[in-house]
Amino acid sequence: MRVALGVSGGVAAYKAAELVRRLQQEGIDVQVVMTRSAQEFITPLTFAALTGQKVITEMFGNESGAANVQSAIEHIAVAQRIDLLVVAPATANVIAKMARGIADDFLTTLYLATTAHVVVAPAMNVNMWEHTATQENIEALRARGVHVVPPEEGYLACGMTGAGRLASVEAIAKAVCGQLGIRHDLENETVLVTAGPTCEDVDPVRYLTNRSSGKMGYALAEAASRRGARVVLISGPARLDPPQGVEFVSVRSAQQMHRAVLEHLSRATAVIMAAAVADYRPVAPQVKKMKRGNGRVTLELESTPDILADIARGKGDRIIVGFAAETDHVAEHARAKLESKQADMIVANDVTAEGAGFDHDTNIITLYSRDGSEKAFPRMPKIDAAHRILDRVLELRRAGRQLPAAQPAR
Ligand code: CTP
Image (cartoon, rainbow, N blue to C red; front, side, top):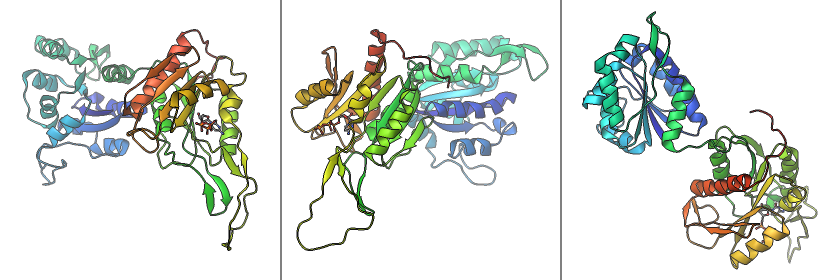
């Protein structure tokens, strides 16, 4: 999700920095746009440091001659890129310009140019807020579908008491999440996700592995975290950054993954085994590099522990989800795994199908559950597939699976 945060000039501008952090916790990418007067209260540098992105402060070049936008039509590019524009704090002046369609700086131009959701959090002196002009402007914005987070009552920076104080960061973040469809329906769950391949060493330079990229597991961790779950992501070697806000455990081999899963299991209310765990490992990995010789070499392999089957025994109310990456007889194999592993659900995909499986950003999944239900989905981005899997976990929970014993607070 991409959000542009418009900061206009009010004492509450400093609270926008906290809002940036709060939105980032939701996995939202924040681009800050500041009006000139906002810069009287807080420097662009603060936001640049928080977001790691250039802050847009000017429509064109400023006095020093340097435009801080990429091109003359940057407002159009930003307008098209974002899922939502939130203006916090929004001054009476900015609200008036938005209501009348005046576009005389980057922020107000962006408002006109975007078709994304718009959230406005006003902050001003109580008389300015209650003035008919402001109230009419607010009504005009509301009538246009803009979501207004009303200011709170209280002691104001101007010394007066009344309505006008910027709403809490939590209230603004909630409005933004609501508009973006970010739900917090997993806030009672602790989800343990495994991801990526495992590597089974042959010698110090060689190992056995598979083509898993980790993308599906990381998408699951991200989606669960966005929906309010505590997330532990246990990952084999993957070239991906762990999503923000998740507890990350890096492992290499199937045995290490097994240990890590057992270590964190007691906290988990749901386990999703998206990792492509190696089924075999060399019986005797060499300490020194194996030298090349003539003729054949035989590598003796032994089974790795079946982590999924192990944790599904005595799972109680913990919901256990496994994956089945197949190349043939997908339904048959998925159903067999549901039984053999005693999982609550198997997410099956045909890795030979176009747009599915290893290293793709999309997947085509079918969910098989123990109640005999079967739900097939069309090709979709892995993050969307992750949400469909989590929807089903939630359905199982609501269908009567109690939450396992009290979870420690986050
Ligand atoms: N799995 C596991 N431990 C293993 C192997 C697999 O926990 N040692 C998990 C995977 O994370 C996945 C599920 O079991 O959720 C199915 O994995 P898959 O490799 O498809 O099945 P296998 O049991 O290995 O069976 P096969 O390779 O014969 O298809």
